[in-house]
Length: 218
Ligand code: DX5
Ligand code: ZN
Image (cartoon, rainbow, N blue to C red):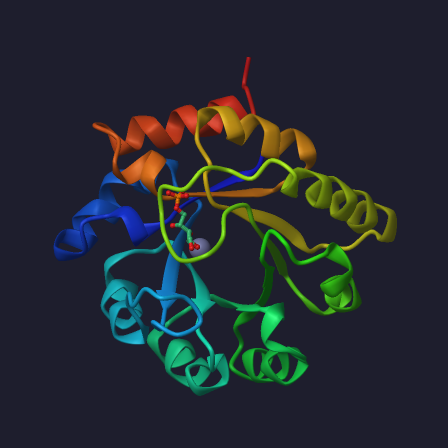
């Protein structure tokens, strides 16, 4: 059974604790999209929001840093209570960031954009806990899933299993009841979903439906 990570990007920021509580029974992690207005055009939230969420939920806080200078933020995210930070490989050698995350006791995530080849992340596979596949271009919720990313997920699944690694494969962008099944069969362990959960009339039911489509219980 895989994991569901609702993305709060599509939640009501003015009522965040209640939004999180609403999906809690079907959430395994909480995906926090941090955008700096430079790496992507949009500006969202940062460590202060993680600090406020931390005492309000026991969920794993999975922080996706879409920022030009993640190194400037890691200390703040660790202190705020982030369980992991995930950094973009497109910014260059992530190893110094991995070391800092480990030093803080955070788990380590690496993410790559849809057009970035899998080869760009493979050298780091043995050093990370989460490998995130963007299945939309980062920046906005509610975009359409890019199916060719599934080829990279399948290839990474094969490599991770062959090498007996514990790294979890996470996919982010355009996940709904249809694409969840595709992503899970390709080998994704964690499905991030924002708009399909928080913009649904019943977010808890939407998360349950995504889980059932991905990993049917009957
Ligand atoms: C996009 C973010 C995603 C976003 C996904 O840049 O990284 O986490 O919340 O939203 P949906 O699920 O609506 O595609
Ligand atoms: Zn994200």
